[in-house]
Length: 613
Image (cartoon, rainbow, N blue to C red):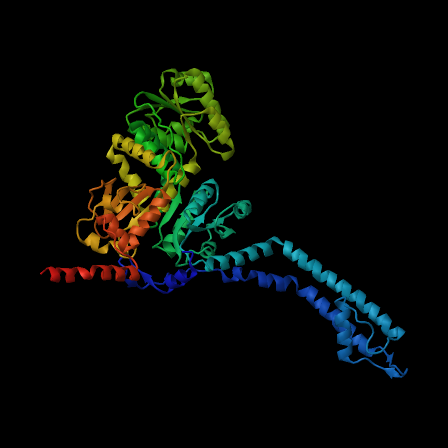
């Protein structure tokens, strides 16, 4: 909402989707650390107290001395300087202006005192300036100043925004994706380096960011947890306990807020779900689901990853993970356990290779080989030569690259999947050209983006696998014919009086067809470059409805297409004459003058009829 007038109007009034005014319930109070926010003032008063006292004493002694030292007037008579003249002299002398000796030339005694006063004032100023520079470099003062600055910026945010806790790789990817959509967000992260990098990054909007502890409810309050403009909380730190603390704080202080949190174990996910109903993203579990989906329905997996990539994402290559045969999984940590369970659930045989027998022995049914997977003998015992798939899933990139090289040397025809842990290793994994690559941070960022970008995209992605692989392959062909190999924009369109005021009577007529809505306002014989992916009516979803689909008031549509198509569709939704043209082909005058002229033009027709009668 970039228009300030609309922003003020939105603050004063609020409407529901049916265009009725509603009252906005006040959010619950969230404790804001006022003491921390006002800490810069107290730090300045405390650190500068001594220098200021020294300056005042020097000034007072100098003024008093000038009034006591004897002088002479212009006639040579004894004369003593008054307090006002002494104060005036010290004011322009201490500030290095120097108007000279007033009102009479000084005596030697007065000049001696003036010189002593000048040196004392220089020492006092040097002490004060040094203390001030030291204060500016003080880490506590800079942190307090940053906290106060961020508090003001967040409190002034009038637009809806997201609170993102954690600005690692996942947070950075999510932030750029949200920025491309024009969504506002604030960031809280414990690392000063990440906050500095964010401030140097090229975002379209100013991003309030604070180096603080996400487990501290006070810092969450500073970042807008209690603000009525905060529309969701995202916990993406690399510490599950910190993410759990964010979920707890949001559930207890703002229970109505949606929360999305990252977790890397099922136990932690259950602990989070004990607090309300947060959406928990487990990258290892998601990757296992995706790998099984790619094996079962490759076109569906291809479409899913393309849409999760967001606008501008390139169509990924169609993979073909083996549907039958035995897989070898190296590393039986969180990823290995989750992946082995998913593959076995698909009916595939799995052999686990792990150097730590203590972890793998817990499951007596595991087909287990204990040893270092890089060792050719260990791989031979695991049966890599006869396997169809191989997973290098340890938490060490060097080990994973070595495992991939060793497995390919033993069986060049293997379908290889690998886990990349550090962003710096990306060129090495790209050069290795593995068949599927797991980057946990990217999995988290894509999944969170799909849930936050448009409300209906996540619903579409959940419903899509049920349509079958052939349906997904056909939809990919339709999208590439419409947009090319790079995904265009995705947006949601509610057919409400507020969002589509020109469609009210047309929708109420019961014959509003989707194909007519997507006609081009400039030439109704041409269709807009847009495709409706989903229509939700009364909670029921219809995927990729056809041109004859009958629309109804209150329907919610998920569309993808060109930006020009979105602008043209907005015109149809808001201008009655444009809607009339695209629906019926009749061109109706839009302006008052043209409507008057049209009535004047049609007026003579009845008169002609009477003459004929």
